[in-house]
Image (cartoon, rainbow, N blue to C red):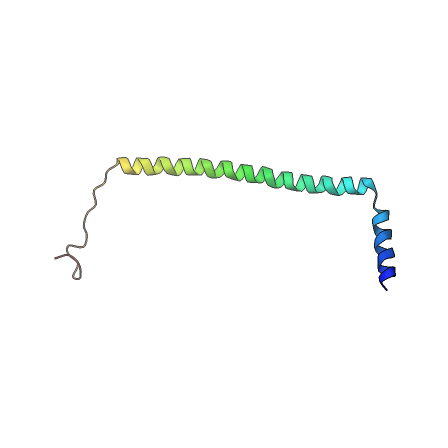
Length: 79
């Protein structure tokens, strides 16, 4: 049983050509390159969104809107 499996596996490994390995490696490289490009693109978009939100936050802080205590008339809060 074991010798048959070994001969089967050895025949599979011997039947793989160098061009097959190059094709498989090329596909893997292209796949990871696409993932890398998508990750860099997403990072750029998130950075832009963060800058936009920071700008909005700064504008809101400049408005200096005073806090109004709305609990004075509430039956459970305040005095």
